[in-house]
Image 1: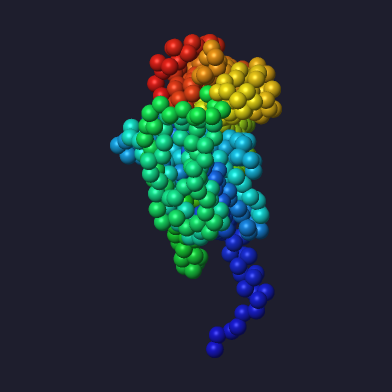
Image 2: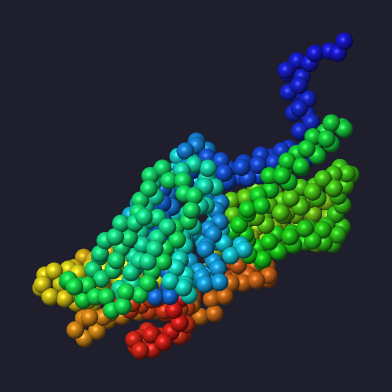
Length: 225
Length: 281
């Protein structure tokens, strides 16, 4: 009948093995670190709020996105993300892309220097335990047709709905909204028309597609020039 | 021992499986090249100093090679993942340098060992810098575009407010008027400078139109990131201290909302007519 080993003997054996095989210890440590870094990409971090503002000028779409990430765990977590752009024959790769930390008002703070991979902006930030961060993305995209898309469906990759999403579209003077895939509320701000919609518990199953048309020589019959 | 070999195999498999395919923010080529150069430098140092590896070191050569290969792969991944491998490389290089001094022959062993240690520290620093330092030019330029929009929004608000006051169609304002009306952030300097760009706002006669221009305060001449040469990142950082500019492109926007850009060199004034011929972004 095999002899039962005591806990002390097992511990001693393990320690001896590790001491004699320092490479094994190193491999163990590397595995833990790499495994933690790998899994924490999708581990506790939550993407729970966003605020998107789009300005449309003739032939051009300018976007500012504010994204809120939260690490609810008691361990630091690594957020590694790719930002996909709606690129097609009529909408080339965006220019003037900038990523930065932002305050709650949306003002840019410390810049984040992203990399690029397959046309996507990629960035990585470390969230400390219980930390919340707003990340701001700015870009300008040329548009050869009076239609543009803001990608919303990537939210589904987080496997939980957004707590709150605000989406605002500003049309420069002389343009008016032709269509929007989400119902929007219209408001005039000076000579600029602003359209918006907001959602709570938002789990989008379609992207925001909107189009505009030339309103001719539309002039505000009010106070603005 | 067979159990240990199996355990090692399992651990390596796990490690490979955990390799993050989504890795980004990689180091620049000179950083990773410097790190890889540590190995030939150590081997050549050992040979030149006449030092020898022990029997145990020879025995575990293959396993050690695997560990270092994985460390190199991890360090290729860059930010956030390279910390531990970097420590491994640093310890390896410094330890080997010390071993050269202890096991080598003749007086040259001290010099060779010291060179190996210094090169290791240099390579690790270069790698670290190549990870941490990025050209600020694209970021500054993108922020300039964002600031143009802030100014445009302030102009629209100013137009609306001035119209409400007079009961007539409003007019656009100058930078000073926008500041006085508290439509701009306090960080916006009176000179129109913000984050390295100089902004000028020019309403047309009668104030029915406006034109905003952003030019880099210091033109980023030849601000090109280094490539393969080890130490290039370190040198670039030192050059940056001398001031190498914040941006290359000038940006312009009028009341149509279209942002235009051009690299016109180190200028401080561009006419509206010229700027309106620039290509939209």
